[in-house]
Image 1 (cartoon, rainbow, N blue to C red):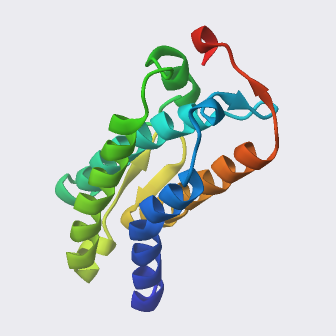
Image 2 (cartoon, one colour; image 1 turned 120 degrees about the vertical axis):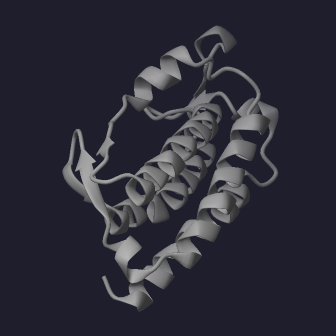
Length: 163
C-alpha cells in the first residue's frame, strides 16, 4: 500500500466516531431498540462499536509489539447475547471514541517497517497492519450507515428484556 493510500485510510479511521455521532444525531430514546429485519438495534450497534474497537486496538498493538502474533477471531453475536447489550450506550460510545483517538495517534507515527508487520488471524490467515487498517477504516462508517438504515427504515420495537 502506498503512503498516500495509508494516509487516506488513517484519516477515514480517525473520522469513524464523527460518522457515528452524525448518524446518532437527535436520536430519541425510543429509536435505540427498534429492530429492522434481522439487523442489530441502534443500541446493539453502539455496544458492538465499543467492544469491537477495544479488541481492534489490542490487535494493532499485538501486530506492532509482538513477533508473528496470533490474532484471535471472536463471535460478535455472542458478545451481543451475553454482554448485556440492553444497558446505556454512553460508556460503549466513549470506549469507541477513546480507542480510536489513542490508536489514531499511533497510526500517525508508524514507520514503513511497522506498516509491514504481520501476524496470523485465526479466521483469515495471514494478517498485517495494512489489512487491519483497511478493515477498521471502514468499520465505523459501515455501522454509521447501518444506524441510519435502522432509523429510517421503520422496524419493530424490541421489548427491553430482549434488547
